[in-house]
Amino acid sequence: MRILGAVLVTIAMLIAALFGTQAISRALPEGLAGWVSPPLTALVVLGLLHAYRRLTGRPWSGLALTRTWWALPQALAGLAAGLAALVAGSALSVWLGAAEWGPPDLPTPPAMVLLAIVLIVLRASLPEELLFRGHLHDVLSARLGRRGVLAVTTLSFGALHVISSSEASGLGEKLLFVAQATALGLLCGIARERTGAVWMPIGAHTAMYVNALVPAPATHYGAQLALQAATLALAALAVHLMPVPGAPRPAGPEKRRRAEGSPPPAAGDAIVRP
Image 1 (cartoon, rainbow, N blue to C red):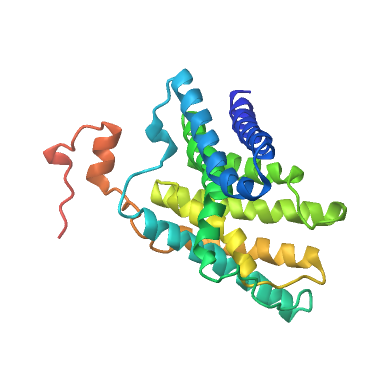
Image 2: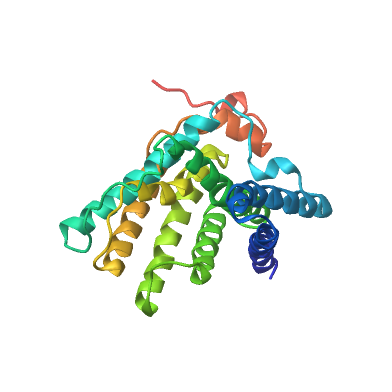
């Protein structure tokens, strides 16, 4: 029940932040709301997390919002992994006749691309990753092993997208949309495990929106969703197996022994190699 409670509290904080931000934005002039809403969403989520974690006695460091020189390289690595997976899924869709390449959807002027990405990070990637790969990951780690934490954060993130707006129509496409979101959650969760921080998950999450710069309008949306879910899952496997910038190295036998508090081996226990 406590695990379910942790998931529900996380989702409640996200919904409260979104509805609260929308309510405030409606009171602002139309031209200003689009600029204010993204940073406001991030600030509201940060405020809710600060209040909840202070109330429950959890340290801020548990969010894995680490201050490190590796933050930008890890975010870019996540963006590259996610974008490569999505573009590969789109390419397969075009090859199979389920989509067609479209003209690049660039903001006007093109220099606004970077600003648009920053606003996306503030509005969606940063708040959601802080909640799922930061807060929820930390809370669950006290009760579950690494695989259990990865499973719960991934499945809850995917299930949340049942109520998310999308182009999906009909039960089949809606379920495939949830599968695509679940595969993205798996990629972000493994990136969190590999790096010990939320920067790479934020980058991978942002790729869902940056992918609009390489549009491939679907003629069969369900097939495209299925293919992108598969390529995102393969990207998650690649992140699990390949070197990641700034990822902590696996502990050697001596470091593992110290972390577990085991006594040092006796002299007579040493293995003599010929």
